[in-house]
Image (cartoon, rainbow, N blue to C red; front, side, top):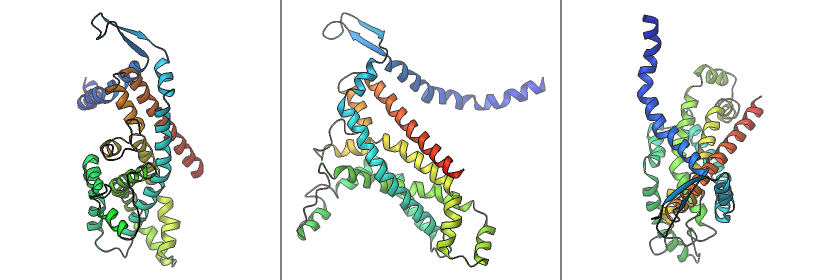
Length: 295
């Protein structure tokens, strides 16, 4: 009897979390997948003659893939991710190594300063940066004009990289903290042995720290890949200031527009599933690649 109670105790403690997890995570995924395979037909002008739901097989997925704007948005964020994620991971790695070096001064202060942008919501961060992007408000545009440069941060060829700048500013400190946590797990004996051998700070970083923080780097890259495909708030806010950003500029914006502007929730669900599959495929491919190199 006591053994049965002891076996049930962990599940009783986990029950609230599991119920909340199933309600807010598992159930929405199931509903989205089911919705992506169904089609809703409305009879009459406003559906007053009845609404019927039928199994649509892969018709919604075919319609989503057949939308050139949606396919272009996926290609756009993939280009965004290749450039932005690479630069951000390199920057946060360098910052983490500098702040954890023996000669670093006030590391706690600078860690807080670099992490602070992550605490600002994406919408607010985009509004703040828009004051540096919009002509007539931006001191950078005025400064460039004083030197004969026509800076256009919201043009068709530059707005994507203006968004990349906001994302990099927001998440570099967050990823830096993940890497710092991994650096702090390195035993001090390793550093002492390297110091006895006369290793320079550059040699310590290249031969000791970088190989040992590989799990943290892998984690940050996977998080960044997923976040890239979820890009939504920044382009949506800048949409009012940049004609180059349309309602389907990113995959999430395309799914949002399909659902709430075109009222086609089933195709939007198919788009959401496709976004999740692309994120899973890219993350899985990256993990396989890193694991193969480790072996």
